[in-house]
Image (cartoon, rainbow, N blue to C red):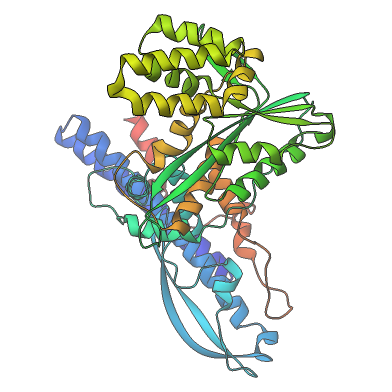
Length: 471
């Protein structure tokens, strides 16, 4: 029997021994007359320990076998000297994994090299494996970094019992992993059809910064959609059709992302109108001009929420608000100015607010009328609250600019329905860079296909389940 078969036998013996121990403990409690939920808890905890230890043993043996296969390969001798042997510990979903690996010195360059780290893609000085990091990135898409660390810490190692956990992942550790994440661009694919009219909602959110020249960053946010329809199961609630969200700390970058999405998802030549809706900020109006093209008209429309809020703050009277709205929709500037003049005489104590909001309406006169004429509806306040503020501005704290950009990328992928964990794992290159050509023995994997029989002990101990049921 070769060394691989011996390893298979050791693993099988180890696992069966753990199961026998669990069975013996349950049987002993039964004979002693011990009853209650503690019996079930003890059993599940023992099985949990056995499966975790088995997984760690299998992974360790495979890694060390790959290391030995390369070390014993004749082709390796032509390029590398054995330099030293070192142990390394990685935190896996099963718990801490410690294994030995060989370090080599290149005969020509004298540079140090570890084939094991290279073959499995282990990050230099990394303490967590890719699966644990992918779980942290996934958790950060919908919760704070501190909460993500606590959540994933509870998933590592023992899943049952009340014993101490194998690790406690701190916020700083999660932050480092987030900053180093390199999610690939999210590909949305071409839609089945292209509408003649497309809608873009825009707004911004200010997020506090730390250790940066500026105290806060303006996050530009845009939501592209084809229209609205009633939400299933709701009578007064609508949903956006084919919604796609993008965000950036740069206006130019945001415009590029919006344009790239439109060109990727639609046949841009078939789009005739693009309505850009927002609160009237200068950057939103400027962005609207970026989307115009030959045969496609891009126009800015004022969000009705901000428009009606301005009317309310001017008149503080629903009847006068309705009268002013009718004058604006009729394009009667004189009537609107006359009403503003009268309210200024009536309330000189509010002159600053009245003048400011009247100027706001004048500057967005055509955009406000366009919203009503085309019956445009904008829900950007809710979108930016759910997509940006709920994660980045709902609790005290500040970010570095690099961390903020990474979190925005993760958050947008999540809000667009992407599998963030898969997206993160796909960012790694799994291509194998071999130091030399040759055939390596990976027969350790054959354990899943072979039908081998090992002698594990007396038959009475192996068939313990039959003994249990026969009683």
